[in-house]
Length: 249
Image (cartoon, rainbow, N blue to C red; front, side, top):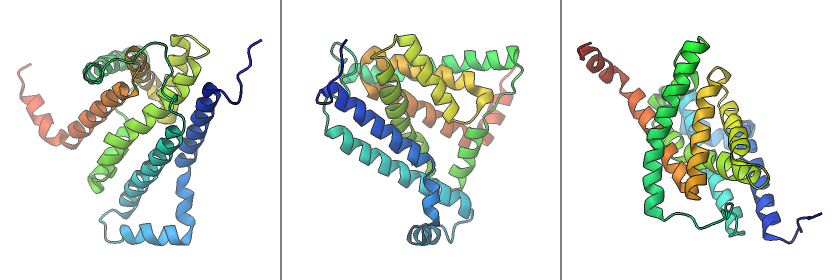
């Protein structure tokens, strides 16, 4: 029976993946740090003059916390250069990876469209995401949230759900089992179980992009483009709606 040595590069990357996962989980509960007086004083002074203090506080805390998680993750990964060597074979070139990231954006839109129709027609679920609506409300109050939702979230979520979870599972399981589990967890973390099909479809496509190119940057690019597109669309919905209504039916 083969036993992975604690000295092997594979074990070290698995350990690093576990630490990053713990770091991400801790970040989801990090708001308790606001109870500590020095932290509390700094952040509440930061939002004291804001029109919507609670939303502004949430936006800044989310942004700072995720920047710290990404920085610490990069430090951990830098100690084990084999961390991203998950799949056999050579990764595609960076230009090809970027191309697939753009293609992936449209694949995700297509996948979301199919998933939405399943939810609406077969399950009777109303369209619209409370999670997205909440993020847009916060973004309107504190534009710094754009940095968090369009840049930081795709980087961190792809690192966690594609490299740490999917990348670890696929070393023991086939693509579909690994992709489905990671995509399902991706959907659960967004705390909208009514739209679990929608989020799972996104996760499956992101996993495919990572697997196809062997570069995490591919799924990050597609994820960033998606979040950026949704953010721009939602922030300008009042301007877009009349144009859509004016189109002859």
